[in-house]
Amino acid sequence: MSEDATANHRIATQALHAGQVADPTTKSRAVPIYATTSYQFDSTDHAAALFGLTEFGNIYSRLMNPTVDVLEKRLAAMDGGVTGLCFASGQAAITAAILTIAHSGQNIISSTSLYGGTWTLFTQTLKNLGIEVRFFDPDKPEDIHGLVDENTRLVYMESIGNPRNDVPDFKAITDAAHTAPPWCLARPLRQHCHDTDVAPPDRTRRRHRDLQHDQVPRRPRRSHRRRGNRQRQLQMGGPAREMAGILRPVSFLPRRRFRRAPAWNGQHRLQHPHSNSLAA
Image 1 (cartoon, rainbow, N blue to C red):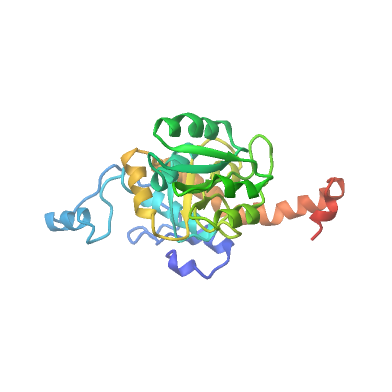
Image 2 (cartoon, rainbow, N blue to C red):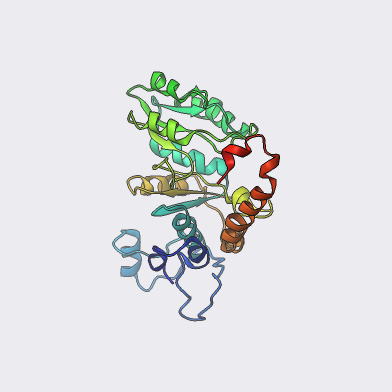
């Protein structure tokens, strides 16, 4: 079943089938692991067409891999995006997303509720690249207006914040961001933030932490090619074997998240200090 065939299906079907076309030779139902670096060209004309982008196909695993391609399409479909890119880590995904949108002499605006690695990336690495990061309190989204200027490229936030475990007000922050030119970079696409999402399946889609991986699903197509260029040029993509290891837990994500989580929440609701606001 192709990714297009699952576009109107529910998330449980997308988790099992989106992005995959059954292998024509073996008819394998599971996604094969293509542990290869190179691919066969039918002829020199075929190779020229692939490199000239007049024909789509596999060229080299640093650029693309069929196993990774299924995971990218599957997660994008489940998140409501049109396409996605898988990266070797969250830092790689965040870096590629920002470097696609901003460059030296420009600035981005970020929530102060950040993972330590992100904080270091923003305050040191991006600074050395000439990209200024301006911070705002996520509890005061109105402060964004005073930080935006003609060189502001995006507004960044993380949810759930680490280590504060706080959830930002998506609606208020994205409303403030969308009154000015910046993009809003955060999850989720399906709610209020309609630009770009950096989603970490190692924390939200897996039961265990034996793999590191991150993904950037996209709604508009306008910068997907540029972000793919960053991924290839900086060697940020993940290997096929690790990406295949993420496909299996993704397949039963709907049962874990959308059935067990509400049941647990209902059981513990009376013990929560905000139980009234959590009522369905």
